[in-house]
Image (cartoon, rainbow, N blue to C red; front, side, top):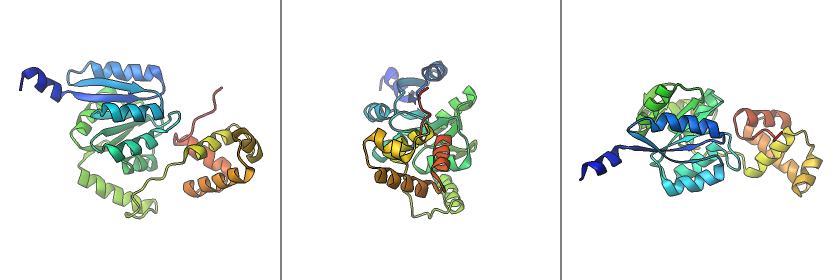
Length: 233
């Protein structure tokens, strides 16, 4: 094989998915300064990103959670269902054990807050590209990660057999966004052109999924975890 082709095979192809242009630009500059890494695609929209990633099939994706149309966890799950060989690193403003657990559970290889140091991001990217996981700053093999997930399944009351992550539907997230705006169920029904009972049914489903006692608690929880977006000012 010619040397140029060998060099091409050794390059880690990366896609950046984040709805903030300047954040993408900063990450892109850091990555492209490395001889063994190349940014091959980027997007700021969840649905657009899913289609782009399926077409490009990068080695590693740097994925934000809070995205329009589809959140980063949904994009990750849908992508990994079809292309399990694509590795995903979640970069988000929210960093807690439950969120890390959910991200790894649906297929992410690592999870970090956005203020991660560039050197650590580069190290993580290379480790993940080799098929390892990085959890709580520790490199883990797939077998070690499975054991870690088993422990957290028990901690959060989810059986090991239940391997399906169920994110909020687009309609449920839409309703939570309107709750954050301060709309009542009646106002939400009028805004979306659906019945008030349908709104109530969606809210009941959300409360059950998130284990919250009222609609406001559910909206705050989903907002904190990046599943819904703040209304545009």
